[in-house]
Image 1 (tube, rainbow, N blue to C red):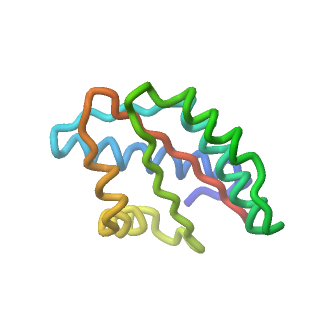
Image 2: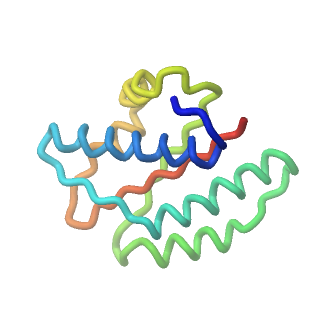
Image 3: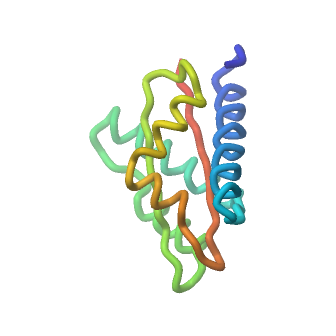
Length: 125
């Protein structure tokens, strides 16, 4: 894991997760497309989640849902899998263990014409 500020570490982890997802899906013959707009919306969700954990109040839920509606095509749905880790000692091992979770496996194996993925990581040091 590279040393540096939390933002650079988060970017590095995001790239590793995207590579992992693309490889996993490619190994079973599935194309993977990432949506930068959806990743921005996930940033909102992470900030709101943190504020809720600190304050006990939910902020911006309506804005988040409206942003999702703008990113997700009519007739499609959004499926998110939040994962909270206390340590990233070995990122590859963490990613391999995620495959064992039913909800993660469902998202990784999604099929369809408009399947798009997004990854957002927040690192606190």
